[in-house]
Length: 610
Image 1 (tube, rainbow, N blue to C red):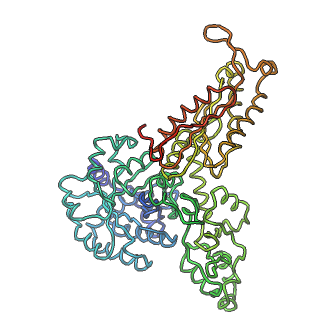
Image 2 (cartoon, helix red, strand yellow):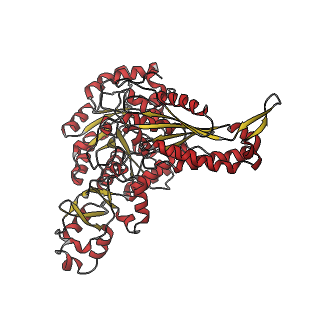
Image 3 (cartoon, rainbow, N blue to C red):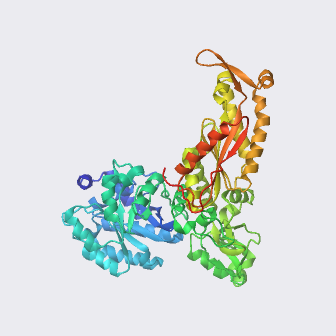
């Protein structure tokens, strides 16, 4: 039914406005490319990019689908296909795109002019110096009465070194033989195949179980439309190793060097390579600069100005070049500053053969790959504004690794802020249940020792009854500030479960001292929220449900702590259950109290079950 509908729409005559826009686009070569990252779940990297084109911004009918449909009706499909592929490949090469490039082949283009299309593709990549093995031809869904047509064309392109991707997963029985004969390198599992299926519980769904069985052992399936971490985890359990969607990264005019922060965090938690012990001096798993690193070539201080200028001219997307002596960076040459200087009269003749260091910034922005996102942001914000254009050099213990883009950094910070705001508690703006649970699971998966401290206010409900909910909100906010003060933002995690419950996830070794200091500070400052009479009597009196007067002690803070050595717990459900029990023990103690779980486990014991 889905293909029938597409065919029916494609048979509608193109509107005059669409035809005029298509003619203008082809005449002016004004197509614009976009690239959406495809994540490699097994290695926590970007496999490549899905590409697309559209007309210039502001064009009413400039979408890819509408332009393709118009080109087909006007008999200009071959011309539009060539223009689209030229635009995509050129933009990818100019932006120094890494990995595979998935290029869409328009429906009907092979049937209308297969040989000419093959020649056009080969000419384009040869002209731009793009290796054919990095180009993946993304075939459309079959829309003809003869699905076998085009197999010869595909064989020809394979022999030329190109890879093939099919969108016909789930095709009818008549096409399954064609699919096996074509043997695509990649197969797309389209989002519409999961209509009505809850991906959060996908592995238990009978329909999805059937797909998982058919995909078992395949490393070439790419799942589309991944919109959340739940989608990713379900697809990962099905054995799918590649995926794309808004959760992984949105379409961008430039192929981004990093997937979204949320996606990297989720994938890294399941990636065996990310959980292995790292080499000394390198950043911890998931360090932001590892995701932003651009492995850009460098030049020696003795390189001539003409050579560097030629390198800029031959690589339009290159914004700056590092000057490296041995392994140590000495400076940075900005594309714009060098271009401005060398474009003046007689500059090539005077300075062209001299060392490029004349145009070098001897004090570039240099950061070690192990710095945190917060440190990196502070460095960039406090730096001279010209670094915002040229970017920064990334080193490992002083040795040059590559370059970093401020644009990629801003994108990373924005993604993390959006993810944090999505689940933040509205009263304290602290991370809520979802990021708390994800953080615990990530630490457990990585085999990192931690301590879970469950914090809860005692006698808080009667406080609200006496002093009002506005005053109660102030107490919760004040509690959050006190607890946050005794967390190391670089090592510890602080979240707000809801109401008057908080969760501290310590990696700091002195977590007991931090908890005791927080309790002492809270005990001293909470008195400011009570009247002098209540402080004098050590509590306050309220009326219970039976109309009887009841005495309550002053509000205090209880903390129940559970240590989680590597390998003891499997997930947050197991550790949170014990943390809740320990918190009850702490609340049974009078005043501000800390109760540490003293349960003894055997050396080889592992907590199982939910």
